[in-house]
Length: 108
Image (cartoon, rainbow, N blue to C red):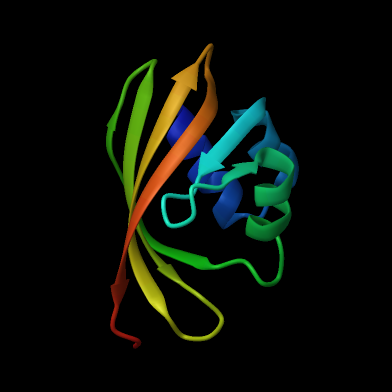
């Protein structure tokens, strides 16, 4: 199974152990909107929580041993939605960094 698919499955199942097995200890998510580097532990607390956004129509566009690219639709508790393109940097079988681009979508 691909590294990115393991991450998607861990998020969908809110499986913190599986989630942290896929991300390196020094992993961070680069938020382009603020330039902030969000570390693994902070991100996992948010994504694996009752307030976590819900992912829909997850699909992996491309993946090899060094990079993964995926597309998601994300729904938030307030009803807002985003289309998100994610680039994952992979090293030694773990994701070490991700960067996202998001486009706001109409509420359902």
